[in-house]
Length: 328
Length: 305
Image: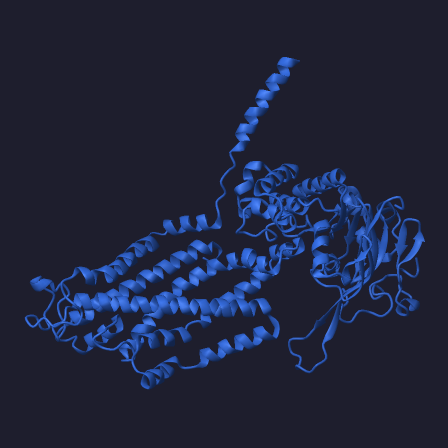
């Protein structure tokens, strides 16, 4: 990895929300919901970082904080050597040219009152106002072909497309500025399995062709394994493990990762029948009042007394694995 | 080899020709128009309402009578061909057809003006509350709740007693008490559109706030605004009739459907046409407006049926 250029460096990012219970008095002190609580990672050019974790662990919030759609409350987000959190609105506009996003619900992420041409062309209109409308149209058509949409569809509206086609439109919109990083927020979880494969392969192909970096959020570990180089496992707003793909799948260091991996279905009935799924006890604790020390200790099969003490940070275990488990 | 590449070029040119023709997409508006035109009740209503409006606008110019002059030969006369009193005359000998059409002008005008005014206020109020959210939203919507609690007839009577019977007062009173529905609806819709992923997508692209509002949010509000406008029009016309019926409307000899109906009810045993014709016109208009409103709702909001 060291030979590749570092493009994004996220340092101890926190996103905290003030929340108020519906029955509280106006003077009751507001509680803090720690959606993302100190996450750090680096991202290199052309690399894919998979982010996995169960619902509500802060994956999407983390992604949105990188784009300032939900402002981070603390930490550093360094893009190409510049801390974005200090940046002005104008700096952000320049960054938005390089970082694009693909959303979970393909149809909902497209404005129903705009044609495909307008939707895919919008980033160009915002960032390249000097282009003539013919030039914009030309690029839109080229991009449509690239993501596997027929050019004739250009004047159609989103509701006339299937989910997979809508996601292709979303990808075309994200790619038209030729960005360096695309954040994919569960881009395939709303699609059929066969369409999922098409979209994933399309993303991989485009990534190779255009040298994109991807942050790929999913809760489907099989999908993440297919596309990622490195994988970040999150739990309750914290990092559990950050490792190279093969290291993570072959010898997971964190008990939470092991539990997640044991839940992947095996497409072989014999093996599947004999498989032991490690079911975690209890529910996800509330991010308003997370457990002390290691946030996973309340459900961890290996938890010891020391886990309740100091909050464990990511530690490097080997060249390709970092884990926040004290016992690993 | 040369031949083959030539063949290939021809094939490519043909393929290019084929794919040149971009399929024209069907916008949500085109779909809505088609659904509306398929709704027979709505289309018939639209035609009838257009006829009523045309008659009210041009009818009085074409007829030989004026709305305030007495025909001394024909006092309280039943509908007749004599002197072309097709709807008959009232007890002062004024031609009822002309008076009904003139009254229609006033009623439709009040309906139109009060609707435009209340829809405008409602959109601005609701959209502002929805966009800004938080405390501003709370305060603005509590004001709306307070407006609902005010008994509008009492206020209307008070205003007319203090300021006299004026056309603009009727419009004003109706406007002040009919914008709240629209404000609530628009606020709700704004909240829902604001949280849609395509708005977030636009923010991620870097679209400015102004463009987000005008390109992404407002076009998605329009459907519901159109629906509520068509529902508001008959309500407003009816309110005008109520106010006029209670003697709070326009001043004699000017008239409106509500005034004519009020006059008619007093003499319905002796000269029933004085009640029947204005009431029929009002009912026809209200029915038509309601059916058009229904058609609009089904056309623009097919999921809501």
